[in-house]
Image (cartoon, rainbow, N blue to C red; front, side, top):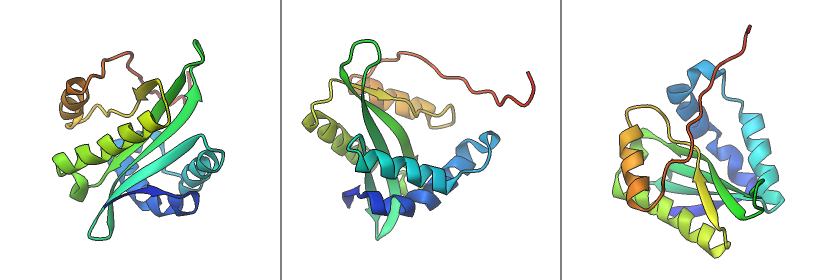
Length: 152
């Protein structure tokens, strides 16, 4: 089942976020559920973001969070996919694509002009995600690199 998550329900995604962060970004420190929930609750309450999720048998399997902002160069209404958490039970091919389609439908309804997907990990799923988003019309714009600055 796909649904939109309210601000008061965002904290329920913390376990999925913590698990996903541990599997994909352990070098970036511990997942902070309070920071995650607080940021998304604020964006939702301010009307600048929303979260959609897919459940399987009542278990949160996948969630996508999107925030809306004016592009800093053009002012165009832009959507950024800020996270796309997928659990092991959520990796079900076509069903994952259905949540993404629901997100794209909502962005279209919200009259968003451009969409950025800033969450493709450099892991074993990388090529699958690249293939999927390229097939539906997305093109690469930039790549992000991360370094923990303990001492420069």
